[in-house]
Image 1 (cartoon, rainbow, N blue to C red):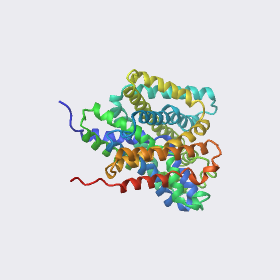
Image 2: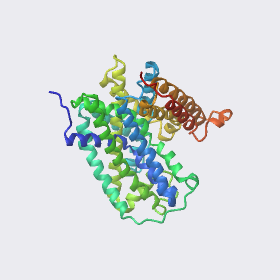
Image 3: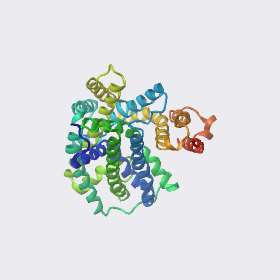
Image 4: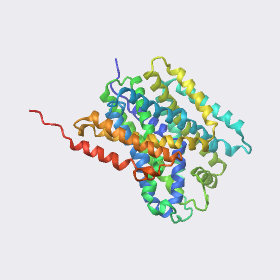
Length: 427
């Protein structure tokens, strides 16, 4: 007999699994640096960051639920496959998944070894993705392995870190500088985009539904119900992590003066408060966060391509993607980011536009046309921003693209116009 509902334990496990998938090392690194740079304006900066680093992924998962597992249902089939495949490749083996091993290596491994080089990095990233591959080969056990074993341990370590921050006096917040002084909330909003969790939501939403199917939840309505619950649990967890990290950053002026990234701030803090024990704790937190994210990304990518293209097998893809991730990781973190930024800037507007039109589908007289027109607008503007980020001279369309946000107003105007086209009342 098929199971119609999850137990409370499984429901919480599903939420914890979702939270763990989102909580990559980047999520631990961005808030402390933002807290340090925003200084006295930290509360506004944190609010902006939470809107895009927590609110946007949450809304994206809601949209995935409303779209019955996809945001591409009303696009032409070929376009939907191309766009979805591009997002999976970017979030998976091309950038986000390899980055997990690199950050784990930088924070969870290098501090304990005086001499590191390309060989040690290659060995570490290879071992990292061997573990990720083994966990990803058995997706039916993801809920039990990640949700009920790894995540509680991760949460325990994060709670310890958060409680220590609450009692940490530190230095007085600095005066905000640069964009943080101009408009701290807007700067926080833009910083929240760096987590890429809105794109990840499109990947993880499909994975969560697949896990639910394997747990016996086959009705679409029930799947969407549990997906929404998992999204809320994950959002609460992310906010609970981000807030103390922002507070820590705002107090860290003396601990890590001139810090270039949040990893330096975290390392300095745990070494100051916990000594060598703190360094081990931080290494454990970062490594677990990176590993759970890598497992989620590899599993989701393999599941998508095996279900979309019949000749591709899930387990074969897991092995292939794991090997590719290990190879790409050895390009180096800085180079990887430089290569990927233009692509991400191009794709992000498309993803957000699809979230908007999916959530507002019931408001359109012609949802299919609305989807396609809004998608086209966001794609064109995203391409302009992507070319700018790649260093192409786009001055001839400068009025259309400003600080990589030129797509927002035109896209919203198009959405608004379509909401004005009401359904004709039936006679």
